[in-house]
Length: 244
Image 1 (cartoon, helix red, strand yellow):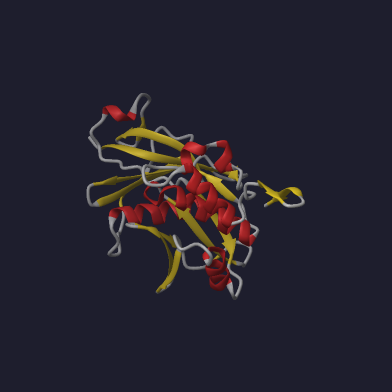
Image 2 (cartoon, one colour):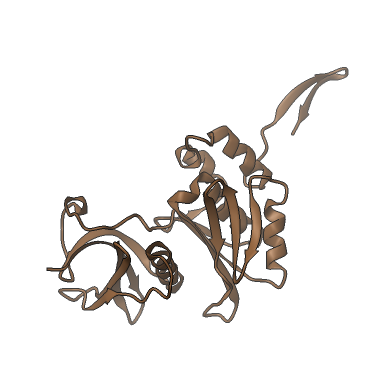
C-alpha cells in the first residue's frame, strides 16, 4: 500500500479539470496527477532530482504548477492514488510544508536586475547577489530568497517569479510585496488571494517573529514604499508643525 500526505493542486479551464499532488518522502519527491472526475490519481511516482535536494525540487515543481495556473486545494492523505477524507496528520508519511507563503511574478525588462537592487538599496538588512542564472536576496542569518531565472511566458514575455517560504520569515513577505509594487505586478498569498502593502496592517502576526518585531517590520515596509511612514508632530518656535 502506497500512502502519502500530499499537497494537492487543481487546474480547470474550458478543456481541462485535473488534480496534481506532491510531497517529500525522505530524500525523494513524489507526485501524483489525474483528472478530477477519476476515482484515483492515475499517474505519478518519484521524480528525477537532477542533483537538487528534495526541498529544492519540490519548490521548483510547485512554482511550475502555480505558473501554469494551478490553485492549491490543501493537504490530503492519498492511499494508492485515492484521496482520502479525514485528518492527514493521522498518518506517519513524511510531508514537510513546501507551500509558498507568498509569491509574485514580474516582467524581466533589460535592466530588471538593477531595478531589483534599487528596491533594497537603502536597507542594510537586504543584500542582492547574482548567483549564476539566479539572483539571491539575503534577508539575515541563514535566510536567502532566490529569484528564478527569467522564463518565457505564454504571452511571449520573459517573467521572473519570487516565492517566499516559511524559512524566509517576515522579510521574505516584504520582498515579494516590494518586488510586486516596484514592477507593477500582483502579489499573492498561500491561498491565491491578491495582497498589497496593507497586508502588514491587516495581519500583523505574519510580519513578526522572535528576533524581528512588528514595529521593525513596519519601519522596513515604509522604507520599501509599501506603507506610509508614521507622521510625527514637533513643536517649533513658530508653532506646531507636522512632519513625515
